[in-house]
Length: 64
Image (cartoon, one colour):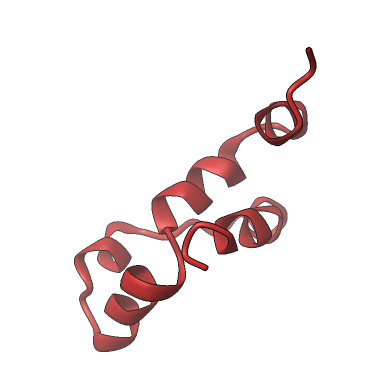
């Protein structure tokens, strides 16, 4: 689940411009720690959101 959710969240992050800050990785609150540890790879989500549309497609649907 932790590896799937960044793929689902990335388009929303791209559209809204929101990015997860380091407090999510550091687990500043119990909720942030839970989300980072069990639900979402925030680093991957931020990286995917920063990619352009063509790079995003190429990453998951490589052309041969």
